[in-house]
Image 1 (tube, rainbow, N blue to C red):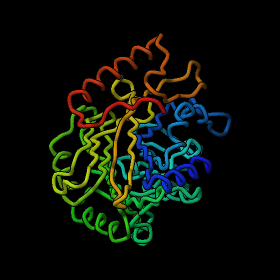
Image 2: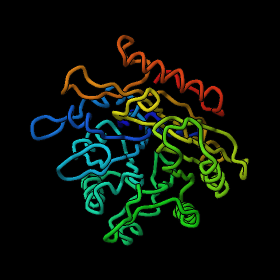
Image 3: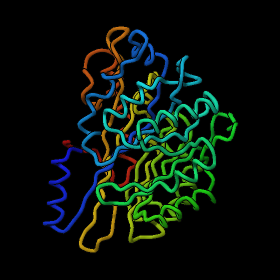
Length: 355
């Protein structure tokens, strides 16, 4: 957010006695071989086209969060099944405005401890916020609790994954898995460190299923019971329903439950996996000085390839996809299926309008 807008918000807050902040969340930033091939430019990579159309939505948010579902490492770079993206990919995501990078996911150990180390190193060298994986126990202790000041709101972040594709962490590296006692400890630690609101970003669920499974529902209920304000899910590679409502255990507080944001960008093939959602959350503080979740809405996104071998992949709002050709048809199919799920299952999370 630029300085002028930030000052305008601060002045407005002083005059009218309230405070607001905008958060955005997107799903899995994948890096398949087709994306690597399209981005290759000589001995380096160029991803400048990939996210350009979404920059107004991402850069103007007070804080933007993305799931980095690939290690960032040294050559050779590769796509599925063992991901390893170049640092230029990270730069492109950062340049478009993402502030927080989630690294606890099932592909985080695709290149073993070395890949985890190189990912953390690349993030740290750029001064980017990240959670979910750590070089060792000491690094985890030093990094957590992660409480971020977002336009005057203290927000705590926790990130965890159901697994790492059967790969065991070695050489002392740490991956945060879904572990209820540790999750409770991390949430409580964030509160003690001053977090007014807590967000748990969680990698869970069944791939390609448009509705959550029982394990997701039980885990979401547990997180709600310990007072988590935002539960943001990823991993299924397709969208799943969103809920914005009073917390069942603390009805004076709202909770946002996002079962799955789907893919942010990928080269997966089906209409469902080619798309995803961006969720926008507005935080609010009124005369009572209490931080609350005010509203939540979503935008549907869709990825299309370039028209030539080295014309890069682009993610955009679904209605911006050119209507002609196979990708226009797939975008319409994705929108139809996603809207059907959201219209039937979402609670108080509608589609956004305007910027």
